[in-house]
Image 1 (cartoon, protein in one colour):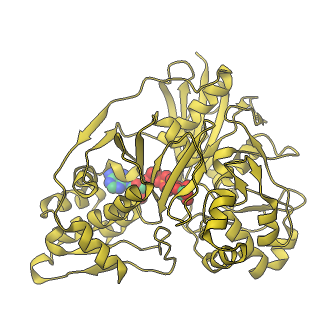
Image 2 (cartoon, protein in one colour; image 1 turned 180 degrees about the horizontal axis):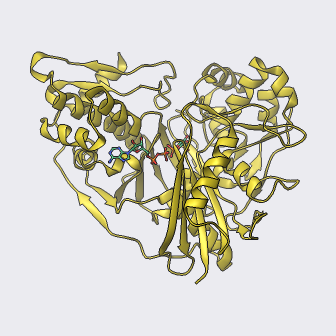
Image 3 (tube, helix red, strand yellow; image 1 turned 45 degrees about the vertical axis):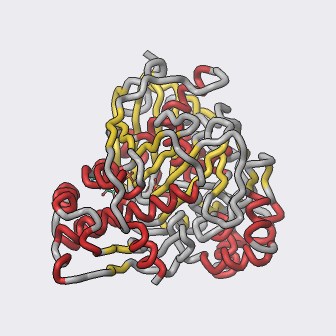
Amino acid sequence: MTLVAGVDSSTQSCKVVIRDAESGALVREGRAPHPEGTEVHPDHWWTALQGAIEQAGGLADVAAVSVGAQQHGMVCLDENGEVVRPALLWNDTRSAGAAADLVAELGGPKAWAEAVGSVPVASFTVTKLRWLAREEPDNARRTRSVCLPHDWLTWRLAGRPDTIATDRGDASGTGYWSPATGEYRTDLLELAMGRVPELPRVLGPAEQAGTAEHGGALLAPGTGDNMAAALGVGMRPGDVVVSIGTSGTAFACSETPSADAAGLVAGFADATGRYLPLVCTLNAARVLDAAARMLGVTPQGLSDLALRAPAGSGGLVLVPYLEGERTPNRPDATGSLHGLRLSNSSPEHLARAAVEGMLCGLADALDALGVEPARVLLIGGGARSEAVRRIAPTVFGRPVLVPTPGEYVADGAAKQAAWLLSGEPEPPHWEAGGTERYEGDPTPGLRERYREAAQD
Ligand SMILES: Nc1ncnc2c1ncn2[C@@H]1O[C@H](COP(=O)(O)OP(=O)(O)O)[C@@H](O)[C@H]1O
Ligand SMILES: O=C(CO)[C@@H](O)[C@H](O)COP(=O)(O)O
């Protein structure tokens, strides 16, 4: 049996799956937590990766490895390849002002959408580099090369060779690489930083990034976590995937690049040579975590409470902007409760309002994609909640399919590793697990009440 390993180095944790390259069958797995916070030293990702690999029984018998990771994070390296400062993550909003400045300086949102497929907000690497240049000029000066979380981990697995590699999917989240042309826009880096640091080589979908320093496994290009999830869940044309992790994302696959001048849809590339238009919110599974904490219950307890409350939570609306928000672009917003009455002042109503509020943000994301999906697939840690699964159709106004809970980002990375080994033009087709279908009538007035509350 030939084994492949897939890594998901996401915001909250690192997961490793080891699968049979031929059938995709799960052989072993491991996981380790990441520290809290929106700036994290990459060494913590490395430590967590080592822990997860060890828990998964090591890589000695693995033929190829691929790393999927959280998108956008700014990893700055000096002339010796040492990390200059902790990485600013995708959910760090300190570069919101820099984003607004950059958008204005290039001539507005349309100019950015045309240049790189996306209008940068604080999440995009390019805005973090502008922030660095303005706020930490010494660190900016010491920065010789800039890469992303998955690039850096792949480079570390390779034993820190002279060059760093990335892929189309992750490069498309930088704000200085164009999915439409497949070229870096170094002029935009110059605009952001005043100079152009060294950048990773952008590999094709199944191009080899290197060889692991220990054990000699082939290293696949890796990709961003959403692109890996699309591969892992076996996304097909017409599908929309809604992922409820630390971020909430809704994405479709497309044969053509997109460029939304309204700035809601990020025009990413995917991991197969195609495109992945995506809408991302900053507030998803952690809204449920926060609500459970406030109510003093477990995630299961929150789900039970929410399912005991009436649809619409008796008019109670929770606006979930606990970390500010990215879509809509409101980096300084906070969460809030609206419509509180004696009649809805109960743990059950609050639990349901948290689930409904989080899902309303994702329903807006789904709508912003502007596609009529044939299937909506619900994945990510938050999709393990029964309340989320049952309430989602009532908020989205359409049925949802929930694949068997799993680590779809790590699975997609493992599939990419198997693809590298196969040398075929398309990724391997692994038999998918089942999906469970959830249906429900739309809740009257819910999205309107949410829209009104979110505007306050
Ligand atoms: N049964 C559950 N109910 C609600 N939330 C859950 C459940 N299981 C996991 N989660 C949440 O999922 C989140 C982690 O999801 P994951 O997709 O792994 O995130 P990320 O990839 O961003 O690190 C955590 O916030 C966790 O609380
Ligand atoms: O910023 C984005 C997408 O543009 C996020 O989706 C990050 O890629 C983090 O993902 P999770 O850790 O929430 O999976």
